Length: 313
Image (cartoon, rainbow, N blue to C red; front, side):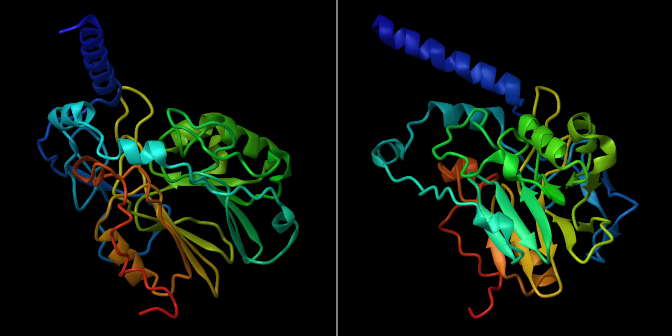
């Protein structure tokens, strides 16, 4: 075995050890629900829902697929050959970035993608940002520039944070939003206040369990829904903060934002709870290899037949 090969193997195993240390891959044993929790100050919109499940270590669980990848799974994933390496290398397509901000000066309902998973939404006059990331993505490559001058993002009413991963919950971006919009309310999952409060002030943060509606006293209603995913920002906080999706409603329109999620019955449940979804924003990134990524990210080959779109069967 040549020297270069040895160095490569050593580097690979070192990377695996660091990965497992940082991300704390659990055993393959399926966790058991120890209790269920919710925010007692919020309305639960699904009458049969008993609360968001947590295990005996106080970590949140996916209610339909509670198991997580094991150390062996992580090892296999990192050592196996990437089946799409050549395809990705040859893919030069990039989404067109339209640097045009006239929608900020109108009053009409809009949904605008601002890159990665960041969206600007105006619904019934209320202005909403979802998972705002203005600069580079932590541990990810950003292929498109942020299309607006961040200083123009004023009069924001609500900021929605789907989960704590760095590419959805960015400290610098959230601090900027709070400075420019001191009255904005930040909406997230359970146990997110201890993180977001340090950046934007605890009084500006509301946290909800799955199937709970935030208390906004507004004509726009926002509910927190399940997603099949996970959360982590450091070595010891795996699944300590709740992840999820959002339903945003006015009298005439409903928008669904799925966050990061693998496939599951929560899509059907969302369609049953909100049968007139007008726009469904569903991410389909980082889905291969399917055997490893499917618990956390949606495969674009799946059909969302449970999300009923007006005019379609």
